[in-house]
Structures are given as structure tokens and as C-alpha cells.
Image (tube, rainbow, N blue to C red; front, side, top):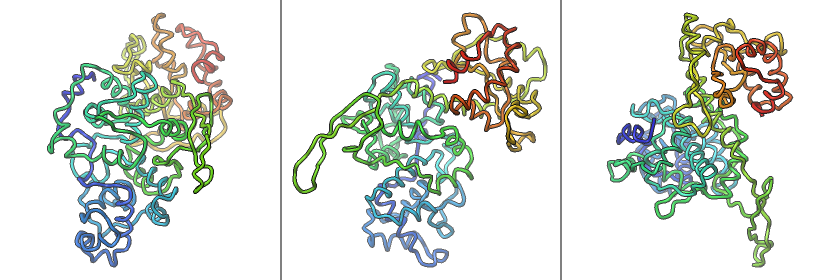
Length: 483
């Protein structure tokens, strides 16, 4: 949707939200500790217990509602998703138990809280309303990626906080990222009337406060939000580029898997609150100098060279592509197959059209029904069976067939090179059906791994593609479009 359509779609309940309770990491830690010590919890009024005992650990609130935030961050179990709280049946989670073994402000304590903040999602499992039933998003990661892309692609270092509330904190999906950037980039974009006031977004949501008060990733100054470098540079290199983002996306859509993911320690091993002074990064070219105490207590200092990586904008686009590819797979799951050759021909020969708002990534529209038809035509069997050793294991889908994924042999990123020839790459002849493992290997393997999977697919399809005018050498395919 364009900026006006986004603005017109907003309501007072559109923003990311959770229980109306202040929540800093220390309070969450101490509240979880107090909760873990409740004797005979099945026969205890947790609300009264919390009110009568909160001062024991110096917790800054006597409201037991803070326990809901601990649930949202995976420190306390939530056995019935989206239901009213019944703490008498809940316990400390696996990751909560690990956290309570560390002292506040220890490095491990900070890493665990950083991980839990990254895993927090909307719609939150504590949400008892139906206002955000169609939200599938990691708030912290999404905000970071929006600010990162604005910085790296457009040189925009600061964004008005009210604009963030209007166009970022109301997004519903990770694949809204490029659209969100375009809304922020639009000089005509209006600020939502729901931003200010006790009955607006700030009255319904504590998300900005949770993020700003507990991490050093962002700065807010004079009502402008910006990224803190070099923390952001480290996070992008050491977390964003190294995580399996499509896998993270799957947890957003499956509450059972998400609960297991949230409540167990994943070992992200990143501290969002750390002070980068004195750390040495894996380098490429850009350098900065920080002062560091060489001997505690002596007052002497020395200069330490910190090497900061240059970021390739192609890396940013590849991360966004991972989000968008996942959403395309979701669309295919829901699509119906074509039942006539006339329908297939019409789709095959349609004019390529860029997706609205996604021009920066050169994403062309694809037809989910074509992809579903390709999977059906393959007999729900991976097309690399017989070419690649292994079981090609998959699972039964809800539709009663084996789950497979559709893959464009000549990737859709190449579509821009075929537009002038009048050729649409989103066509049945260019779509192969793969098991999840083969599909991920083609996308994310080393060049040698990609070649092992790609070559037999190329050999099987190239004659048919040549007849359609898609004349591409194998080395060009793998080196230019699978790098």
C-alpha cells in the first residue's frame, strides 16, 4: 500500500502493544525471582503475594502485572496463549532458570535479556485482545532493520519519533520492511493523530520505553530516533547476517514452536547493552579510535584502534530478501493449483510488474498459483531425488500432501535483465519443486554446495528454457545470480 493507504488504515489500536506496565530488565529479573519463590503456588493468590512481598527485592512496582511482561519475554511460562493470566499453573521457564543463576549486570545476564528481547513478538502470547490477530513481527529486529536500511541506503541518520510511532510501530509483518522505509522516506507522510495523548498509541503501548530504556542500540534526542554506532555495526555483522532469518520467521506463525523457541536459551551470544570501547571487530577498512583505561586505578589511558566493518548494501538487500522469500512461501501454501492450460499460459505470458513499494529490492510480482501448480506437477516429490543423495525428508502438509517449496531456477532477481526481451521469469517452466533442505542449500550453501544442487536442475531444464528465449550459461547463472 502507499503512504496514504497506510495512514488511512490506522486505528487507535494499531500500534505494537503489551500490558500497561513499566518494565526494565532489573525489575523483570527481580519479579521472576520473587515469583519463583512463591510457596505452594497452586493455593496462593499471586496478586496479593506480589503486593505484600515486592519490597523484599526492591522491585519498583507493587503491581503483579509486571509478571505478564516476564511471560512475554519468556521468563515465566504461558500455558494458554492469549488467555487471561492464571499464575497458579505457571512456572519459571528453562531460560528464566538459567537467568536466575547469574547476578544482575553480569555479561551472561545481559546476553540472556538481549536474546529474549530479540525473540519477543507481536502478537504477544499474553495479548488477550483481538486487535493484533494478524501481526507476525519481531518488534526489536524490525525497528533495527528499518533504521539500518534508512541509514545505509539513503543516508538518513535520524527519524522523527512520531513518524516511527505512526509507520514503524504499526507494521504487521517482517516483509513490510521496504514498504515501511518508503513511508518514512515520503515527505508528504502525515503523523497519526493517535500518537499523542493518554488515549493514543503511547497510552496503549510501552514498546518504545522497553526498547530505549533497556538497550543502547537506539538514541532519542530532540524527538529524533537514531542508531548508535558501532553497536549497530556489530549487531548487523554478528547477529543479522549470521542468523537463519527464514527459520526465525517460522516461529512467528506457529505458537507451539514459538513457545519452545522463546522459553529455551538459544545462545544468540550478543549483548545489546554492552559498551564497545576496547573491543576489536573483524575488519575490512573503516577505523575509529577510542580511549581505554590501561590500568584500573592509575588514571592512565591509551588509544586503542577499533576497526569497524564497511557494510555492503547488497548485504542489507539479502536480509530483506530472506524476509520476503519466506512470505512468498506462505502465500504458496494458501494458493490453489491451476486447472487449465489456458490459465497457465495467461500467467506464464503476463507482463512482469514490480511489487508496490519494493522497487529498491527489484522484487517482481509472482503468482503463487503457478508455484503451487509446479509442486503438484512434480508429484509432491523433490526434483533432486535421484541426483542428490539423502532422504529429501519432508512432512505431511495440512492439505494431505507432502510439503515442498517452489524455487525459480533462474531467480526472480534476474527479471530486470529480461524485461526488455518481453520475457516473464515467473513461469511454470522456470519453477522447480524442492524439499526444504535442498531449497535452503541452493539459497544459503557455499558456492560448491550450491553447484551440487543447481547443476542437475539446470541440465534438466535448460533446453526448455532456451526455447522460451531464456538463454543463460550455467556459469553466468551461478556466478551472477546465486552469489
